[in-house]
Amino acid sequence: MTPLQGFERRDGALYCEQVALATIAAEVGTPTYVYSASAIAANYRAYDEALQGAPHEVHYAVKANSSLAVLALLAREGAGFDIVSGGELYRVIQAGGDPRRTVFSGVGKTAEEIEYALESGVGSFNCESEGELALLRDLADRLGRRPSVALRVNPDISAETHPYISTGLTEHKFGIPLEQAERIYGEFRRYAPLALDGVSCHIGSQIFDLGAFQEASAKMLGLIDRLAAAGLSIRRLDLGGGLGVSYKPGQISGSIAEYGRRLREALAGRGFELQLEPGRSIVGQAGALLTRSLYRKQNGEKVFVIVDAAMNDLIRPSLYQAHHEILPVVEAERPRILGDVVGPVCESGDFLARDRALPDVLPGELLAVATAGAYGFVLSSNYNSRPRAAEVLVEGDQWRVIRERETFRDLIRGETC
Ligand code: LLP
Image (tube, rainbow, N blue to C red; front, side, top):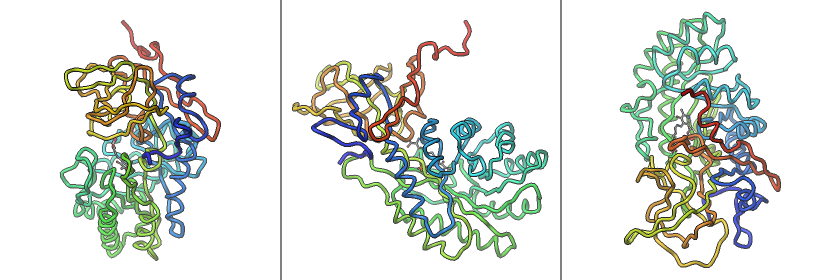
């Protein structure tokens, strides 16, 4: 089983839903991100269904994949959104998302971004410092808005994941330590322009350990009880991002149904709204990066498969030593090699896979880099003046380009000599 959803092999050829990836590559070229619409929708519904019976909102974390068509698809499914910048809010609005069902998170919101969000009617803010809270109060007062505000509390929980994407310890820049948060709730509750009625936390990404999430929710419930005892009633609890997903055959994605069941159990009878902000587990396995092999060479012992996608297209292997499966788009009988799959960028750190056992890949052959739907295109850049990839959304036997490949003109837009 490949760690992909919505993709399957038919007679040796890899398909996304009913469309052969080779067809897309022939028409759109490579590198191209391809997403399965039905897989994205199914993952969103899995969260929604897992929380049925408890008042809840699923806010898709826009940072994972912010392409308009992906946001529009999720908006149609009924998702709310979790944003971390003015740019993400702009995208949500352009895609038809509802600002009132959007929560503005993030550690460094600027005054302009907060104003834009308030004016657009963003319903909730998760605040990460006292300074931000004071600014939000003043701006809300001036604009005559009264958003729902949660403090993002740092629960000081160590969850096993890559150090760059672990966020729940006090050594991280995120959130406000618990004791400080209690003091701030006490001080700011009297300010009318804020409905200080939420509590939020986020312990990190690519986490499988439901116990860590449970520990976080238990700490948040304790805080909510203490706040209630002090006369402050909480209306919403936001537990942050979703579960880890499979990047390797045999690795099993976190069970959304089981997570939902445990949350419903922990929150039964509490009467407030539960919010989640999943990103990776909605789009990660629903996407692949299509790339074509350019050359194959051997330097001493090492075989290099040089492909037309690079670290500027998918930086996760270089940045987090992340593993992405690399699959031949059309299977053929080949001897297996142990090689590096690398891109054209002038950096030794430019690789998609290292020391990987693969069928020998000939120049011109197509490969699919799996589980690339989350934190793939969004982290891409123009490094080495490489135009960014195209994106395609597949729905059944239909497919369409949802983002055109950049041109050289796009590369110099806004520049002068
Ligand atoms: N909410 C907050 C406040 C977050 O910071 C994040 C992710 C999420 C929700 C969504 O978490 P998810 O459901 O996707 O695990 N670029 C890294 C991942 C960075 C995650 C940042 N925050 C990667 O490629 O692995």
